[in-house]
Image 1 (cartoon, rainbow, N blue to C red):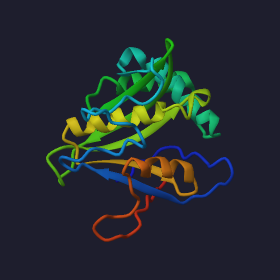
Image 2 (image 1 turned 30 degrees about the vertical axis):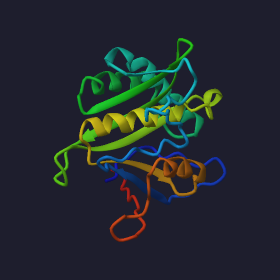
Image 3 (image 1 turned 135 degrees about the horizontal axis):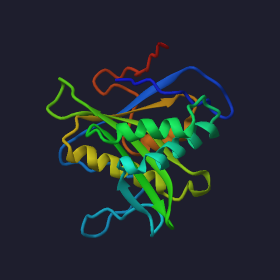
Length: 203
């Protein structure tokens, strides 16, 4: 499945090709946490800074989420509505049960977010989950914050009985593709071995 979102050009190259990556829920199998350690008791050690807090956003967080998404789009030179417009839309969206935003906070400041949507599918009893956006402020990257957000998103999807979690990634964005592949995502159909692509039509 593919949802339309503003595309972010790769900082070194602009390419229209995009691949779809997905991770299917496999019973009794742990998600690959991209190097996150497991304790002797089998519990996963929390990635990210020691004082990192993750929580689900509510309508009162719409201003924060709107600003984070605005900064994300601005950083990657993507056309974007104003932060206030995004905030107003998130205020409505965050009232829905099928829209989830996870906020990462460190030192009293919200430093990143994951935005997901859940939708029904005839291919399973649970929902299909789309990771629409995943963003961490530049100064806090490479510290495990993105991994912590993705890990929480996967845990929540499994708890909801989701069939799979999808994410669209630009084909030229090699670092991002490697990040998701370490977590068990693939752009190759497991049944046929065919490359999966995302087609988009402007409306």
